[in-house]
Image 1 (cartoon, one colour):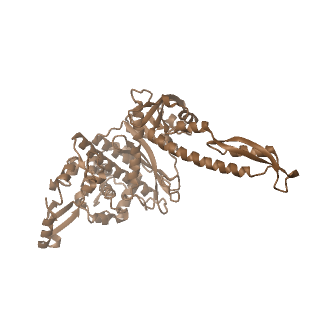
Image 2 (spheres, rainbow, N blue to C red):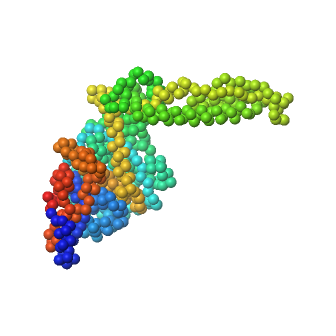
Image 3 (cartoon, rainbow, N blue to C red):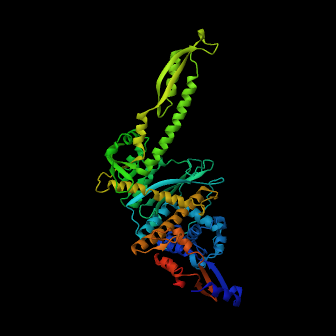
Length: 563
């Protein structure tokens, strides 16, 4: 181990060319997880290795992942500059210089990745990663999100050449790889980011219930609707996975066509309340039928239903927290609606009508606009007209009051805080009611993943690449960044829990569930220092050593000079 004091002392004595300081920080962890998965090797088997190339495709992908998880907002066009301060050879491979990682090399590799089939490449890597780290795939969570872009995007895929020479001889990988896929359309569509003014693309993703690990990732055109593709994705995923996994999704999955398509799969989905029988069900079940869940704050009622010709279990869920929120909102809506109804009635009462029938018709039309109220004690009286146009100087006016419509309000009172989860797993011994709720709540795994991909510190915040093909390739790289991140986080958390150990979080409190971002911060200011052609690691301490021991040995070797 070497200290900063030793370095400073040595700088005085040594010539500038005799000392070199390069950053490692947390990137040794990133590089180690990449090595554990075998990403470089898989990419090279699929893409091939060109004769006499200074940096191969697998190393380029590794460099892009390291860049993506560097959290320094260095876009791809500044790629070589990013690695000028990084221990490039140490982290990526012997002989790899920053200048080799230029935009021409990156673009060429991204084009080759696209042609080979991005979703297939990602799936191969992710499944191998899950096997390596023991990730359970008994449940899989499906969701999508939009990512906005700037500028114009034209298809302009240059010709790329694949060398016949490959590292290894994995015929299976070659056969799986998809050739010449069609590019997506960068266009306007429903924006989850509330940016309808910007063009976008869609990321479709399936994450494991165990650790939020992304297993399936695919990019789609910016105007694609979830309901039109979720069933197809689920079937495709299950077919490739060859493991009986429970597919969990939000209401977009629950359409008649999707359910029929997934007849051979086990699925769990939110039921949209646009379905009449679902809306009726949540507003008619009395409070007395609900049973307390083992999950605090929830009550449950199980029903057997048949929808789209498929027998299924419907779990009506009542969330106490959501119920309280819904009731507060309902009170506000009733108050606002009453004020509007009174104002409308006041205005109508000042109008003159030619006959009693016209007055009653106008009152009926107004009452139909009331959501929570009704007309009470209405009368139509004859009076002297104030207008000259009225025949015989007679007009008719309305007098009425507004009262609360208890039946309408009671319906919403009963519905407050309620939603329905459906599954075609009929055996409660195989999947209990509490497990149904628990699995649906775990749907946040995808949301957390999308939150990560959209983080401003990530290089996806402003996507500038000028072709859909390269944007798709970048999307796959973003997915690999998420894969590496979640695997490392899961590994640390599991190791801490198994050893009944903790580390201090940002507030100095003990935790066994730290975020990997905090772990990365704990590895800040670690340098590879070369003195007299000897390498040393600076700023090492026992806390960092403890954390490192929670990770695979592949991470250890990037810091092993200090251990």
